[in-house]
Image 1 (cartoon, rainbow, N blue to C red):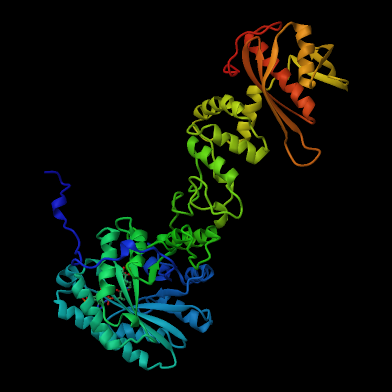
Image 2 (cartoon, protein in one colour; image 1 turned 90 degrees about the vertical axis):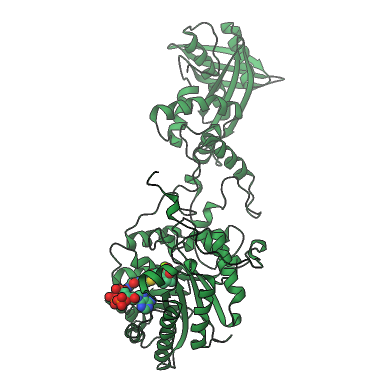
Length: 565
Ligand SMILES: CC(=O)SCCNC(=O)CCNC(=O)[C@H](O)C(C)(C)COP(=O)(O)OP(=O)(O)OC[C@H]1O[C@@H](n2cnc3c(N)ncnc32)[C@H](O)[C@@H]1OP(=O)(O)O
Ligand SMILES: CC(C)C(=O)C(=O)O
Ligand SMILES: [Mg+2]
């Protein structure tokens, strides 16, 4: 037997068979968001935040638009206490925001908690104790009644101390900690016992928070637990059901999302998912999940880079570049077929129509990212990616046959460099491969128009000037007519494309030609201040490339796709 022994583990508790509804539901609105950054996130740090860091983080949470904020465990630590005092004494809590504080079911801690809150206008007192069999049997060494007594005593102390401050709008929250590892009948019973003390009403609801303290089962089991609880708890109209998922199996967001289908109305989590062990539920991810389904998340996530900066600086934890929705690399495609699909769909995407771009689940611009990073070229890339970069950064629109001709050169170069190619290096590669300004070069030309285009062109070849005359139905055919008569070479145009490289009249033109030279195909490019010279230079480039490949100056030999250029 190996040391890797699966028999050591058993499945987490399941709920009894019931009339499950959640798989048939769809989400239609955002939940009440609760930030746990300053408590659950903070208690998981190697070095918990200073008061100054908490203040900075708080401002970010408020900027994002979260309306219920867990601010700490003021009875447990002086910085948490001092931070709560700062919030109250410096009048830092906006009118539409409610702070929450956490406390165990121990009277001296509850008393200190209320002392920390003196002067507050409204607050949530979040009381918890653990309920799972492991906690009952191994940590607290108590039966169900003993654990229930802890919760009931805590609820009584909270009520007693709250009654001393009737001017405050108190809200009470209870968490049967380790809910997901607790038998569902006991979770229900202990919450009923707490509600018997608090006597919530529809106008004064209490919050029952059902934590996935350690994620021990799949999100579907969690959803079953939540829905079963919602269906069987009494006073449902006097209770807000809240969830608090952790990420031990990597499913915190999924568990929270399915819990919303199952009836939860409130979600606790952290910005970017810091928290105990593998973290708390990531509010940014869940909110973006909703947003991408056309649901208003009710949070301002349009500047995630600000959030990332504050979170990483305050926690000292860096973010993965492939973090869902907001990682640095998540809107970048290196692979050829993805780039091709993105380029084609972006071209067809209108401003006012529903977003439909392959491989991009949202428009990166919504969260302040531009298209710069969307397509990057390495050896996994195809013609679409390099064409996208040339078009985006230089306005160069490659005809398809030129894309096909350039792509192998780009791939070879990125393999040689074992890395990414910038748009500048792709542009340089295009001209290095498909443009030759000598030995034959254009000096000057003159066009005259009669029934046909007449061309008088001055060329330089190996330092010698020659002037040729030709005619045709355009400047290029007139040139080829002149060149053929001069050199005896058969040069025909297979394909041709030219365009301006900008909007204004000063912009250069770029021309691409695909020539048939004595039965062989060659692609060439040239750029110049006007379209006619760009086109003539492209044809001359093609002739030079053929001559270069054949090693001859007076004739042409085989050259396919400029493969040896
Ligand atoms: C899942 C969660 O995230 S829960 C929140 C956890 N967060 C924290 O604990 C951070 C802040 N906590 C602390 O700083 C400390 O635990 C304090 C100050 C609150 C208490 O410190 P201490 O009094 O030294 O107790 P300690 O930390 O050892 O806690 C264990 C004791 O609390 C009891 N206890 C633990 N949780 C609870 C609870 N929710 N209600 C009542 N008693 C509890 C335990 O039974 C144990 O009692 P014992 O000493 O009689 O055996
Ligand atoms: C205190 C509770 C809500 C908690 O953090 C957890 O159970 O994970
Ligand atoms: Mg937690």
